[in-house]
Structures are given as C-alpha cells and as structure tokens.
Image 1: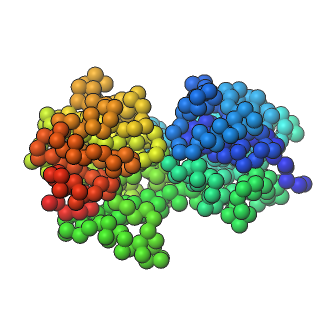
Image 2 (image 1 turned 120 degrees about the vertical axis):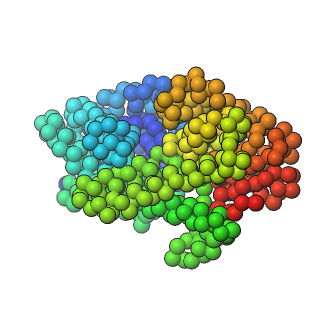
Length: 470
C-alpha cells in the first residue's frame, strides 16, 4: 500500500477548533477542497455571512476565511454529503465534562464523538481516514475504531488517527501558521502508518517536517491532556505564590521574573492572575483525574485535582479580598467588573473567572456593572444563570447591569475589578473614571494590567494581585 493523496477534507464541527484549523488548511493547501460541516444552521450561516460576521472572534480569522471561502473552503449543513466525498474526516465536536452519570464532574462526555462516528459509519461508502481532533480521553480512538468496524459497509476500511490541537485562543491563527509542533498519532500497522503519512503530507504544505511529530495513537491522545495539565499547573503554582507575596509584602511580578530567568524553567505561564479559564485546562485536568482514578492511581488523581482546587481557591480568595478591603461589606455597593471573557482577544467565556467573581459578589448583595468588548449579552446572561441556578434571570438582572463602555460601567462605582486583560482597559481615561466614582475609589487588578503608581497618583486605592495591601 501507499499513502492516500488527500484531495478532499471534511471537518465535522464548526467550533473554536474545527473552524480556524480547517480554514488555515484551506488557505495553505489550495489543491485540497476543505468543507466544514455542522448541524447548527445558525452557526454555518454565520461562517457564510457576507459581511464576515463570523461566529468566533479570533484575531486574523476573518482574513483567512476571506482569502479562500468559496474557492476551496466551504461551510455546509449537509453532513452526509461531506462524509461521502471526503478522503479524510476531522472529528472536531464538543467534549464537555459530564454533568451526570458515571464520572460526572470529571470524565469527558463523548456523546457527540460517538454520534459523529456512527454517522460516518452509516454514510461512508469508500475508505476514509478518520482523525480525532477533539480533546478526548486516552484510548477513545479504540472506541471509535470499534464502532466504525462494527458498522462499516463491505469493502469500506477506516483508519483512525489522533491529531490534537495546541491552540491558544487569541493567538490561534498564528499558532496554526507557525506551530511549535503538529502531533499525529496512529496505530503502528502498515495501514496506520500510511494514514499518518497522508495527514503529514497535508501539514507539510507549510509546516517544516521536523515539527511534524508522529507517535503511537495512545501517546498522542495523552500528550494533549499532559500539555494542558502542565501549563495549568504552572499557573496554579504562580498563583499559590501570589498569596504568599500578598502576605509577606513580596511582589509576584518580581518573583516570577527572577524565577523565569532560570533556563530550566523559562518565563512563560508565570503571570499571576485571578485564575485560569477556557474550554481546555480545567476539563482536561479533570479528565486526567478521572483517568488516574480509573487506573487505580489515587495519589496521581489527588495530585492533579489540587491544580484545579488551587485555581478555584484563587478566584474565591480574590473575591474575598474585595469584600475585606471594602470595609467587610459590599451590600448595595456598586462593583464594576471589567471583562467577562476568560482571556483577552476572544469572546469565549467558558470557565471564565469573571463568572465566579460576579456570582460571589451577588451573594454578598452587591450591585454589579459589567463591560466586555466582545462577549454578547445573551452569553453573559446564560453564564450567570447557570452559575446561580437558584436565582431567576429576572432577579439576576436586578443586581447586574451590562454596560456598553468602560466609562459607563465605572460611573458611581465603589470599586473597579479587572477580570480580563483586554488592552483597552490599560488605555481607559482613569482620571475621568476617578471623578465619576464614589470615594475612596478602589481598583482591584486581577490581571497585573494597570500602572499601579499612575493610578495611585490620581487618587485610587489600588490592590494588585500578588502584592501586599496598601
């Protein structure tokens, strides 16, 4: 046998991973037709929007889609047609943490993966390379292969690959254009290695061969979880140290800078914050916890669980510091929260620290003014309702006001809490903000974003995470 020459790719799932990834593949591989399919018609319509109002905010994404949509990049709700025509199929569907049943709160919900796999088996009439793109537990590919082989039509063979994504929201396009590495896992059979070579040839259009790593199927699946777990571990470690800095008067920026100069450690992911969020870190660590427990490795499970517990502690610790500083009560006080996305340059709110902060402020009977430059109002209300299931949306809206600008959000506030590191929050007219706030006026910097000395000279009481109180 020889590797298949990939001419047509379909991606099942038009979300944060599948959309940008396959758009860049289309841009870099003009000889390959790429179709992204999804049953969500509204999402596909947004990808096809004439004004390029895409369903995902990601810097540079519009330019990529604009360069190849309608040429070799297509978006469709016709999933079956995409499956039938493709040589290679990416499965890039959501794998949230289970909310009920065995493993609830820890294990990944693979329902969408199974549904997509069964759809492929039911529709395909020719050989296909099926690629796990979703983040999945180790050995999920084995389950997919079992389903495909049990339901395959005569003379129809499926080869399974694992090709996890390593994208950071906000820099995803650059990460795709210039990846640290592309990881492809396959069975070490002749057919598996041929399938691996076929996908490698796609990425080789723009990625240097030495950055395309080919490994065993199970190693590839575990590597994704391991990478996210270790990055999250660094964040929780520096956040743990930030608490010690606040108690001792040390400066977490100075500590992180000194530690980062060690070539064995390096400076990345050593910035203290109110806590990490996003779709991956917490979900993947909990997945690793569940895997460890399933393998009867309780000490390993406990180790990784602590990373998540430290992250939750950092959020609650920061919220408590706000209350303590405001004379031990924020009842009926107006608290401004700047930022709702889990990080800058994305509209993604999954596991955002702002959700936890606002929930805690609401419990303390505060009134909250909120502003984020990208997150839609409907998403904010949905997230806050899920975070406080015992409150009706009507009651939540009595305490929370969504504003259209930073200045509007800060007016008449007792304190401003910076929850997301949007660049525009650095450039706010802080003198105008100060004039419009109740005094004393507090700024709580949960992202090490603002110039503390500058704001202090204006008159603010500035409380910065990882630094002792004034």
